Image (cartoon, rainbow, N blue to C red; front, top):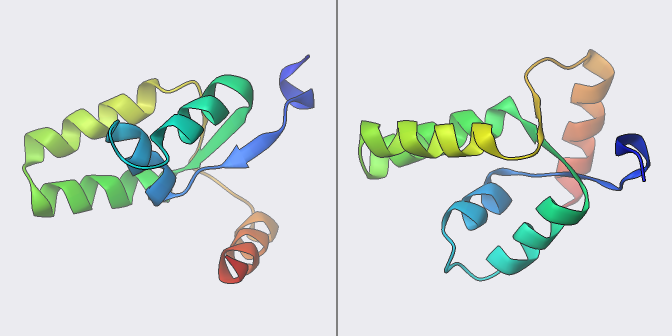
Length: 95
């Protein structure tokens, strides 16, 4: 199966944090998706994890978590078109 044929999942901050906290409920499912499907992580997830971790823990922990996210076998999206932004925003309002 080619990369384009794999089902794609857009990870939000919650899913990504679940993965970072291995004992969190749902971590197994998130890991399963990561291994089987194509994962897309928007830059805002990195931003949210960084600032939340820095605020609640330490700068070192925030940098460590961001480095871990960058190592995931996922597509990191840091630029999107207006259409993608609006479509994503619309879908986010439904969930």
